[in-house]
Image (cartoon, rainbow, N blue to C red; front, top):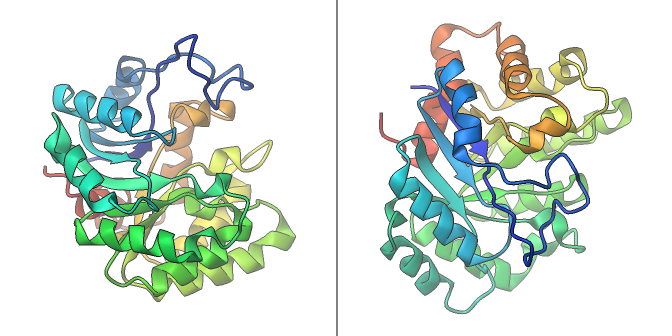
Amino acid sequence: MRIDAHHHVWELVPQTPHWTRDIPTLHRTYTIEDLRPALRAHRIDATVLVQTVPVEAETRELLRLAAAEPLVGAVVGWVELTAPDVADRLARLREQPGGGALAGVRHGVQDEADPDWLLRPGVRRGLAAVGAAGLVHDLLVRPDQLAAAVRTVAESPGVRFVLDHAGNPEIRPEAFGPWAEQMAALARCPNVAVKLSGLVTRSSPWSTAALRRYTDTLVQTLGPDRLMFGSDWPVCLLAAGYDQVIGAVEELTGQLEPPQRDSVFGATAARWYGIAA
């Protein structure tokens, strides 16, 4: 089974401000129908649909879509991690139509000014509730927040984590070493996997040659069974089309044996997000 472990959909309405408003390429409605031809062309059997805004209403919409769309194998939604009733909120989301597709939650930590936001006691309590509910927490962080993310993973063995976009590394020579050290630290934590996603938008212009040392490092430190392909569509369109994104990851993992490639392009995501064949 081939899985795209990270994509979005959204609908813009005039009265709703959206984070894409200053990005013309993204400031439009994107639906699963827009994505379907690419999924068919690349034999993608299931996807992980990921939240984009910090409101539960969007998560409810994504779950309703999952209930109606067989391609959506799992949803990573949003809930207020610091809310005292976070466990009840998660339970209510699971009770709504499509709630069985809720496999994880995500908070846009990269939008928090505090590089140590993940270390706050209230956040840690919320993460513990996510783990207790049997859900994954997707980590979306800036490079200066990566150290706190690694520490959070290490200190939260009861929570399963997925690091989005390989931690959003800065694709420049002087930044590679510190990022690689953090990946080595993550590799020592069995409760985390990493997405090979979002990398084409980390440098301009991008190339597989520039990205290879990053993907090679991830393969060598975490191994293919803890890596998963994600297109980051439609955000990837800022740098590359779907064909280019998946083609780049296929090229960058071309040295792997077929079972290892199967892990990157499906088995890891299926296991982490509970997607049945």
